[in-house]
Image 1 (cartoon, helix red, strand yellow):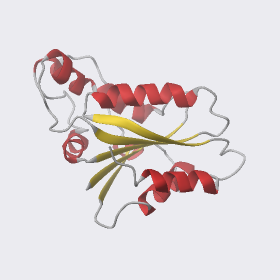
Image 2: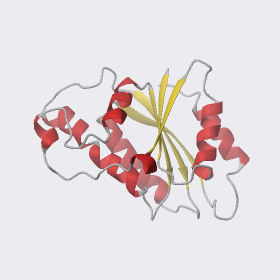
Image 3: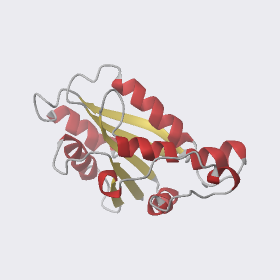
Length: 182
């Protein structure tokens, strides 16, 4: 089983990393995990250049590796801290660049992915209560991922991490999420 984790946190040892580690600890031993740290990649934003309207391509090559891994993934994990009720800029750039999958699926009626029901897991941390953030981010993730053949299956939410570390029950939930399958 191939697991692709998109880490949208700038902090390698922060709360989002704790959620990722808990998730990884719940995976079966035969899982192959690839983690892309979006702050290291610094994906370019979509420029609405329309290159993806006519063919399965993007004007920018910076997400070519992610695209290749996404096509092979059995499970997609978004690990995201809340920034102003939404996702950080690198994650937003990736979500916008999923436009290429929308164009292929909905506009050109091409089938890029053999499976269209692969599980997607959202690991979400918020410094404060995250009021309304969960629903907003879930909608963004499930909309973009639908065109890449993924279904948002589970959200694990760690609120109030400015006041305390991720709670043990939330970490246990992240570990359990690794066992879910569609």
